Length: 121
Image 1 (spheres, one colour):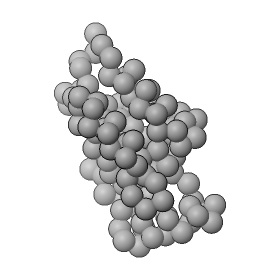
Image 2 (cartoon, helix red, strand yellow):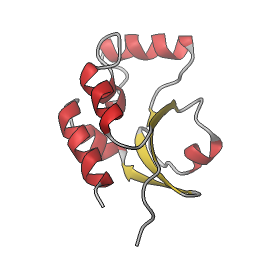
Image 3 (cartoon, one colour):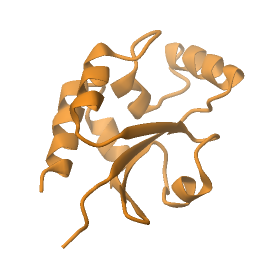
Image 4 (tube, helix red, strand yellow):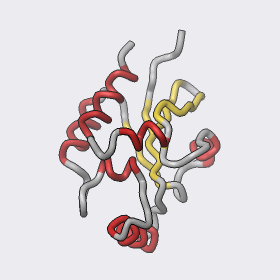
C-alpha cells in the first residue's frame, strides 16, 4: 500500500527569472513556446482564480517551481517538463506527466478533477 501523498509539486516548463518569464510570455503569444501546466494555472497575466481555489481545496500543499529554480531532488525525478509529482515521505514520483498535462488542453476544471482523483484513498 502506498503512503499518503503529503505534497503535490508542479514544475513548469519555463524559467523563473524575469527574463525567463518575459521570454515565455512573448513566446507563448507568438506560438513559439508552450507549457501546458502554465496554461492550467495561469491566465494572460495572473494566476487563474479557478486554479487558486482548487489548490487551496486539495487538502495537501501544491508547490510550484520553474525548471531553473526547482530543488535538485525534484529535477532528478522528472524526465520531461512540465510535470506534477507527489511526495510520499522521502519519495518523489511523477503522478501527471507532460502528455497528460497537455491532454487537459488548458481546462483547469479537468485538471482539478484529475488531482482530486489522485488524492482519493
